[in-house]
Length: 130
Image (cartoon, rainbow, N blue to C red; front, side):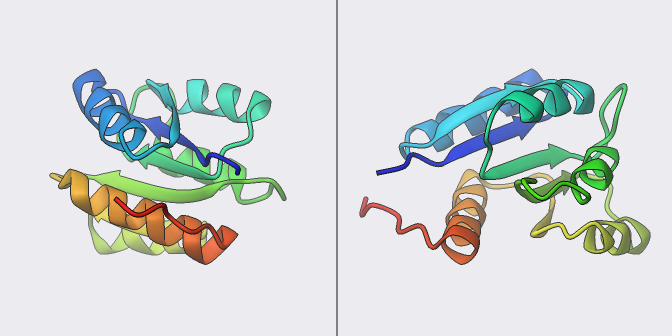
């Protein structure tokens, strides 16, 4: 059985760690990146099924990463997260084919539900019962 590989990209290391722990506890392989450039580096070397991106990060925003990935045939399913969402950001996220746009603060259960839905919808993955 394939273990889904997730990428959590956020410049807040405590938030990244909380997401990593919550998702790893569900049996996912989770890789972390502190900004968009680090995420692109990881994505160039590793197959990722679902990538979670914070919008506001140093060096490269989540939307900038997603703009680059939208042109790639192997791009992961992308989820954008931000504490400062507006209609323009939501439209741009839709344009670059974000699977979901989540407003921070985010409950860990909400993240798990979105990841499970993305894996099921895009890859036909069946979660193991809890």
